[in-house]
Length: 128
Image 1 (cartoon, rainbow, N blue to C red):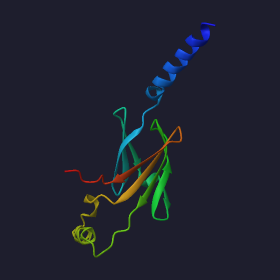
Image 2: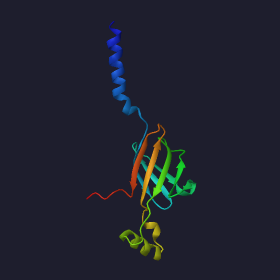
Image 3: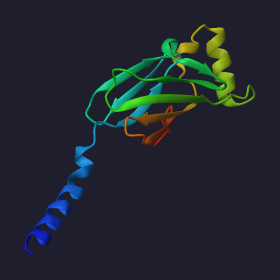
Image 4: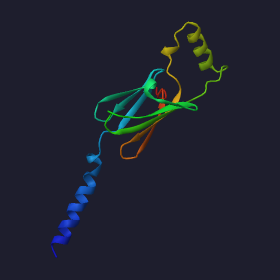
């Protein structure tokens, strides 16, 4: 009869330690015109080139190989209104052929190998 409480204690310890057993997870995402850069919880950085992705309506996505903890990414680009301040700035940078210096506005969804979905805004919101 003493094995049951011991088993319950062992099971509780395993459950408490389970979050530490998970693999690396994405903690930040940065989008440029050419690639998506993911920062992982273990300190690694994974780069997914847009050229290797599949274009989708309003964005692009890709299955990810070689980045432990990530199985798929989906990028939904935000449309920019030409009359907005961002639209004016983008137009000015485009006229100066410097459009690559401004990160596109997008929502980035990263699916882990375990099926968990992480959502990021790129560029990240400004925090004073």
